[in-house]
Structure formats: structure tokens, C-alpha cells
Amino acid sequence: MGNRTLVLWDIDLTLVDLTGIGREWYSAALANTLGLTLTYVPAFPGRTERAITHELLSAHGAQGTEEEIQAIFAELIAIAESERHVLRDRGHVLPGVPEALARLAEHDHVVQTLVTGNLAEVSHVKLAPFGLLDHIDLEIGGYGSLSAERSDLVSAAMDLAGRKHGGFFEPESVVVIGDTPHDVRAALHHGAVAIGVGTGRHSLTSLREAGAHAVFRDLSDTEKVLSAVLDRQPPGGR
Image 1: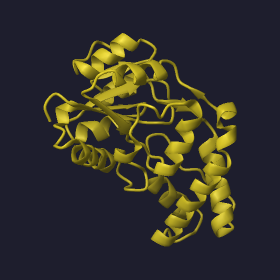
Image 2: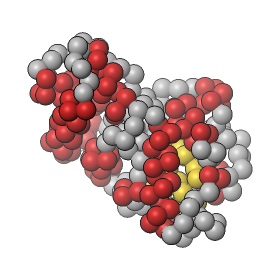
Image 3: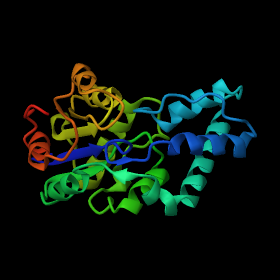
């Protein structure tokens, strides 16, 4: 689609750090919907809500039916909404994020949205308190309710963005930014550009080994981040 660039942002430990919230919300959701006590916690980083929920239900003896999954989803949304007012005190924006979002938004050809394991409604709750929604189009994102496979979220966002903006985004014009090898592999699955950020639980080495085109410790060097996104030529992350 011409020279358009589609930027697909991860949320947790890429844009914001809300460590510990996920476990708390799942514990409450499991108790509220099925009366079960959380005794097993699946791995969260880079995984989708559908994958996490299915594993969680199975580990606690539930059948993991679609009805149960949707019940957990609905409860997670309700819990998130009820705690929206405390998130600014519970977490923080990661270095360089506001600057990167704002600078990319100065370019008319750049479209920014999300590819996140979070549910769409929870994504809004997590980002709104920190003022991070001004430059992100939530309507065309790929969210964790869709699939257990993160690559499916990338294709969903590409499709929605293409429909809204009048054409197909070529894979080389799509940039996925995240903190886990899952983010990197989801990008590479579609031939998109993968940028790894070392603000999560995965090392820079693991992000490089997963195939990231560029890797940064964080997003504080705005000019290098913009170069990696706009030029799509790895500048040698640091």
C-alpha cells in the first residue's frame, strides 16, 4: 500500500509495566466464575489471553469449553474496569514510549495499533490511564481473544488496517514491536519486520536469536527507534 507503514505494538513490558496485575486478575476471575482457587499460573509473557485461559482452566480441572473461556474473559474485563483508577499507582510507562508514539504519529504514512495478548477492552484499560491512546487506533488491533497463536493476531491487524486504509499492507511495511520471542516469531511468520525490546523478561540475546531485525534495551533512543521503524533497516540496537 504505497509507502504506508503499519506499526503493531505489544502492551505489557513493551509500552507499560503492570507486573503482577495479570496473576491477580486471573485469580479473581477463576474464583468468581468457577469458584476455584488459583494453584497454577501459566506463563504470561508473549502469550494470548485465549492460550493462557485454556491452560489455566485445564490445569484447574475445568473442561476449557468456549463457554468457560468467555466467562473468564467477561470477568477479566469487569475486574480490569473496576481497577482502572489504581493502575497509575500500580504501574508505569516504560522509557521512551510516549516520545516514540508521538514522533511516529508525526508521519502521515504511519498507522499505529496493537498486537497484544490482552483482550481489546483490557488493552484500553491498561493504556488509557497513562495517556497512551492518542496515537494508537484500537479498532484495527489484533487481540488475545482471537487465537492461541500470536501470528493470527498479526494477520488480523493487517487485514483490519488494510480495510480501513483502502488496501493491503505488504509484509515488509509492517513492523511488530514487542519484548518476547513470541512477538518476534509472530512478525517473521508473516514476513514482517520484528523489533525486540529488552524491557521484559527476555534477554537481548534471546530476542536476537529469535530473529529480531533490531533489538533495543528500551525505547529511550527515539531517533534509533524511528530509524528502525521507518527505514526498516536494522541500525544495530543497543
